[in-house]
Length: 89
Image (tube, rainbow, N blue to C red; front, side):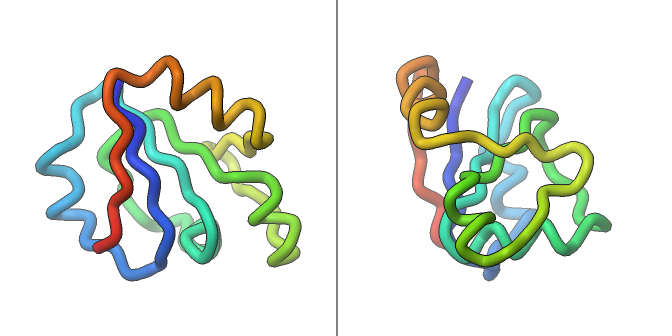
């Protein structure tokens, strides 16, 4: 599994989907958690996470289909991943 972290709302899902496989995961961090407000987005993976601290700071709730994770769970995801990618655009 690759863990792909998004940190901005400016994301090209077509480009992102080219590197994703079915068992990969996406983690929304920093301003990317605002993408939780767009439930119509078609994510290229089944495992979708959002960092709880970033949701809390921005007073956002995570919608169905997105799992909120703590900092400790984030570290666990990183350690399980075969590759960690920071996707900036």
